[in-house]
Length: 343
Image (cartoon, rainbow, N blue to C red):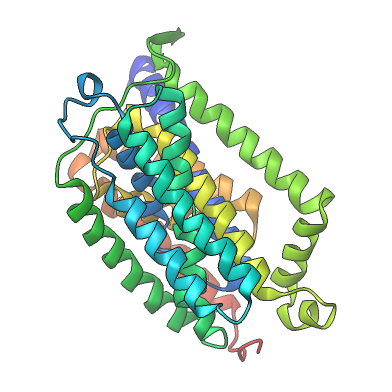
């Protein structure tokens, strides 16, 4: 391996590691607050850019969709409507949820009629965003006293359901999306896509935003309280349910924006979310699912290992990355002791 190859592998590792870091931060946030391992996070990441395809002009997308509303809009609206029915005893909240459901359909219809690219970009994020908090309300909150294993089973079931719906909504094809920043910039010997700099910038912004949110805002401190001790937080008047909605909303927003920025580099398809989310999960595990800085370090390690494995043994790169879990789990099994559920 010479210096040129090492430079290319380093650039590839940094790009992949940045995406895994964003997913790992989202997973750690959700797990710390709700004890849910959000397996379907990868589906949220690919849903947003695939929805964006439905808002692109025919000459850009290459598809004749005839102003068709994307399936994610119907899914998002249906989940909000279901949420409103469940919360019908609270008329104000139910009314707001109904308005939000109608708003999602209205945005999707407007986007399908043809809008500027920047507006379609925002519409795609807004259409997919409610699916995250609605998933928490519909599937996890009814089992609020369940074990982590039960939450994991629900999350895996949701992952398969969302991936199947992705195939129904968007078909098996991969789509090429226009980049916000086209062209490349040479850094030493390595040409780097300008779009990748947006991914790096968003990652830094997300980390800084999460730091300020958790240290300077009352909502962030409430989430931290729930992460430390949900029962104690409840005694102080902090609602774990509201904290769950906020954590799912933040995680879904990070995943959607990450997917939109990453899409021009990977040509998204419905099936790509699983592996991305799984590698973000590995990074989160390396950080113990409790530490944000360690999750970022773990994500960069996963990206470096994947890049090295792609060069040395490309057929086994995913297996090598997932094998990182084994020594970590073995080490944690030696240090941990059996404890009861918190509640």
